[in-house]
Image (cartoon, rainbow, N blue to C red; front, side):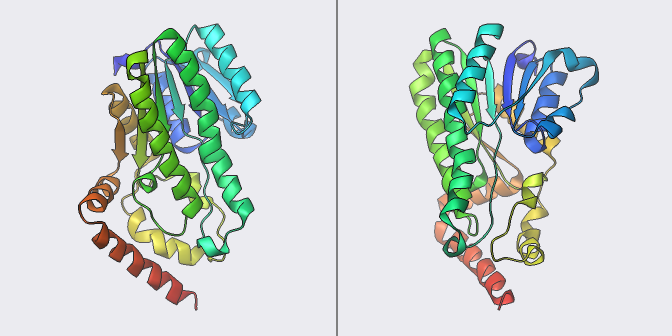
Length: 271
């Protein structure tokens, strides 16, 4: 994938999981990487050896519009342009919607949606001005299929899919490409997210059948970059993500029946 060699790439959520794997793989491919994360300790652990001269690490809260605007303007001025933006940062809170507080909702939407809007819109403006760039938003299969127990996460990811598809159309004649990635299960720290009124062992049992199809962050990153190199509009990652997306389009009733049955088993185990 020589297309990434020498390119200026911004990666949010670069301190762990998919973001870290993407940053390291892009460096291997010869890119100049601006790695962003809110967690300074995780960023400090992002070691690259011989490629360290092409890695620039910055602690930032992407929910703060002024921080994002200032940083991306500085990167654009220094690099001349942002060739690729990878929006990876994200969080979730598991629990039934009836048990979640407005603060739970706001916390997820601030990072997963407002943070993505901040980085996407600011980068999009710079890219459109220069007639070049590619925005890659990491959503989820839950942005294509509405899975239960993570309603705020699902809401945010559906919005990211919609935002990405709208900008792909708007950006076509401006030289800006936009792709949205919809992974299934990936072995990342997001599995350590807070649980609301659900014991962790019960939740683990609930997702265990799906986790059998989980892929490593490294494999996910490789699939993402292959899709981006081909300028795919939607990039599903993992067999299960592709299967659920297909079933959700062909027979949404059948998919809902499966999900309702699984949720019923979980509720019964909590009584």
